[in-house]
Length: 314
Length: 61
Image (tube, rainbow over all chains, first blue to last red; front, side):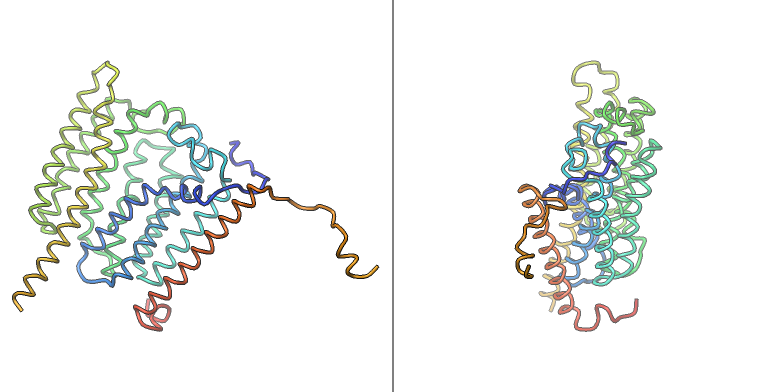
């Protein structure tokens, strides 16, 4: 592996390169879902403590991203989508990314433990370790189920947010975890279908590479059929109001419709062979965002109306 | 030869000489680290105010 050869000249890495290591786009989704977990949780947390928790979760996610880019530099260099990342592009030495990631991981967990609570810190440490060790180092290169199991890391942030408020582990936010967990495979496989050659060249055993496109399209449909009811579950279980229920049902129906189109696309021979896959990938991001945003709106409006009625009653 | 004479003499060039680009990059990174540490101190300060003194470190786990 030529990338591990130490660069002797001093670093030219810019601050922007380090920020890129933290995967800001992934981080924003992590912060957003953690915020929802934080606000949906029962009880009250001081806004400063809540903000502190979010900052720690964001930095912890950034640490996981940096460690992922450190370990995956050889894969990233061989894929068009990731070849321009700081390490494969030669702007940043692997050792710099490793040191940066380890420092941020330590600080984020310790600060979360000291300023918020140790249970949230333990969950954050678990999330980082799961993403870096279980997903990046182990599963990603060995099994087509890599993103299914690895998705657990991406699904944990709402639980961290919830635990930051309550100070103990709970079962209730598990439904939020399950939504993200079952969302991850169809989301990434839709992408992997039209990037199959990229993954094959890099030697990553993504499902389309190993099991073929037809099987992947079938699995996308299966996971989406589990995901859509899970999306409605917060309403059925009483965490969210009817507005959320309607939105989750409608957007879940679109997800299922797109998954069927992805499945039907299998036999198409035209240039637009991956149109439905691209639509599915794009809409899946919107879907997750809509569900969590609606949970947030629902919670905030309930709190607002509650205090309003409380005010009138008093 | 006095002490100051010895100090005035050009030392032989040793070690790594940074190029202008490397110096600029290092300076930017140093500032970013300073700002981050400053923000961390500020964070601990504000949280201590919010929680009240003595509760950040001294508390049951």
